[in-house]
Image 1 (cartoon, rainbow, N blue to C red):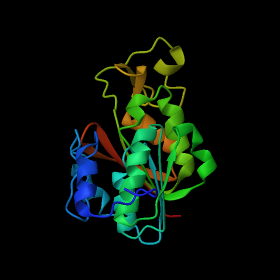
Image 2: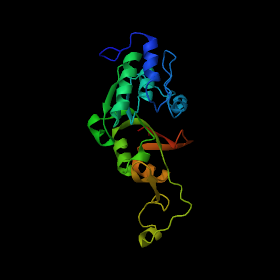
Image 3: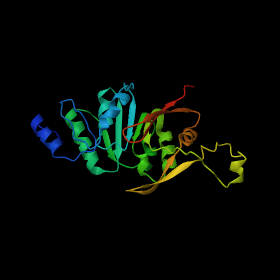
Image 4: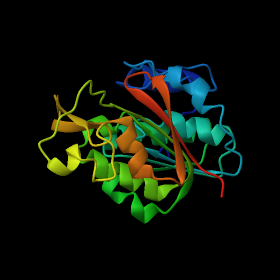
Length: 230
């Protein structure tokens, strides 16, 4: 590998991939595959069905850049991937260089999103289950989404929710009883996190967007969010 991160031949490229630890399973143009611990390529059929031509794309928590690589190959004009893990971002940069793709990979967190501006398409895959401010993070994602967002997160499914708040019982809040529900889950890495209901997610995105539940994803629930045509 030279100073730019480019390998001179496929054998060296493959040796570097084999010597790395990977989370994502990424199939490359050369036929090489990163040996990920999770079959993240199972999301590819759904994500690749979007029209990326001339679009701007943001992947929040991009890991080693799998969906950024895909979007750029499918014609996206501008692609930005952010992740707090510098090791993963380095992997993503090396892959992009050797695949001949111009992608802006940055070390960053959800809090840095607003400074990036709006993007036509936004991904946030299996990230919100590892942040303590899930509702605030959903609001940030809404602010940077132009037309489309694909989110995989944990959802709450309360069978019964009770509140001692008298206004809640009298339905004076304007929010349904189910909408006000959420689960508090202990995550092994970050402590206590919140799983919102689908209705609460819809409340956060508001009437400008249509939130659709696509069922179980690779790890959590898959949501497709599209801006409602004006």
